[in-house]
Amino acid sequence: MSKTNEVLIYLENLPADKKIILEKIRKLILQLVPTMDERLSRGVPFFYYQGKRAVGFRSSKTHLSFFIMEGNVLKKLQNEIAHLNFSSTVIRFNPENPIPEVVIEKLVLARVQEIEGQLSKKK
Image (cartoon, rainbow, N blue to C red; front, side, top):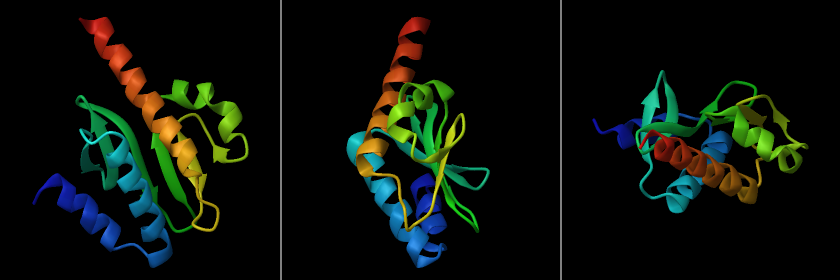
């Protein structure tokens, strides 16, 4: 089974309200960075850029989560996410109050930029 199919099966098994939101996030991520590689890691969908884990999402009983794999990204965009429930690397939300698309765009692109910076330092 392909890694993408694993993510699609994960989404297919969610309650409709959560599935709709996470499918929108998935499509947005792949539109922003078509070269992202998606796969499940420990049962959670993650998106990899240049081999590094960039972002991910998850559904739980009480909320949805959007993961940013480095705390620096959330710190840099703290003013834009101040109204959301977040910690160092995760934003928690619910289907009735999703993360605005513009915020997801900024988070994904900031994480990609961060990874590119890390990779360029290694050269």
